[in-house]
Image 1 (cartoon, rainbow, N blue to C red):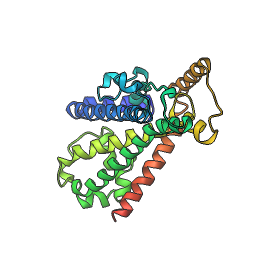
Image 2: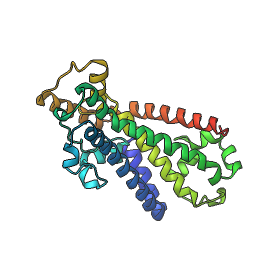
Image 3: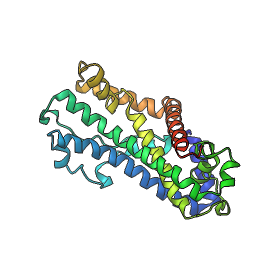
Image 4: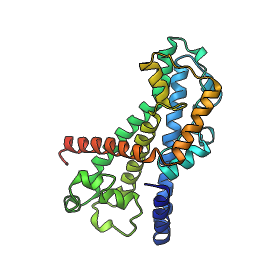
Amino acid sequence: MGILTRLQSWGTWLTTDPVGFIVYILYFSVAVLLTLMLHEIAHGYVAYRCGDPTAKMMGRLTLDPRKHLDPLGTISLVLLGFGWAKPVPVNPRNFRGNYRRDDFLVSIAGIATNLTLFIVSLLLATLINPLLWKPEVITGNGGATAFLSSSGVGYAILLSGSGGDFTQYMLHPWLMHVQRFLLLFSTMNVTIAVFNLLPIPPLDGFHVLNDLILKGKLTMNHQFFQIAQVVLLLLVFSGALTTVLSTVVGAVNGGVLHLFLLLEGAA
């Protein structure tokens, strides 16, 4: 979803259902904060276990959002659907073991955390689905996979500002709030995981590429690092990455969703 489309959707939702929109923003804010903070805490914790106490000493192993949020990264996540937090400070000279191995472990920790949270939250969302919606509603809208996909009716009702009272189609309406958060949280986490896999400094994918495939052959001086950051910002805010990331995220989300529903006998 582009910036203008997202803002228009939210604007329509706000004018037609202001209370529902405010409640959604609360869900959205919590999902964003947890996704970004847990990603960075994972980096800092693994660095600490590898012998580097820098993040711990600087108070980055905390759920205090003030320690983690980057203004541009947060704006990007809200408007474009993908973003970043302040990178956790890491001093590789403190690593106790093999440098390349520890650098890889620290780099992959955030992505692994987001993918784990994505899998768990999406699984719970699929398990809740038959408890929330009436069977005829799910089957009448293409089945569970189509219903819960990002282009499906269920997803639209919960997350895309459809507005209106849909409780008549639900078995236990209070579960709507649980499923809404789980779908938001799963989407946020898979998006952040895929975005950070890009092999562009300072994203985690660059370290993964350099440590795992190139065996540490790439080195960066401060000037190269700054240029890479500018290039990344241009790619992000020009919209050049949006289509590619949306396609990959949609494919991953759709594939895992269908797999879960197949295993549950609900696809």
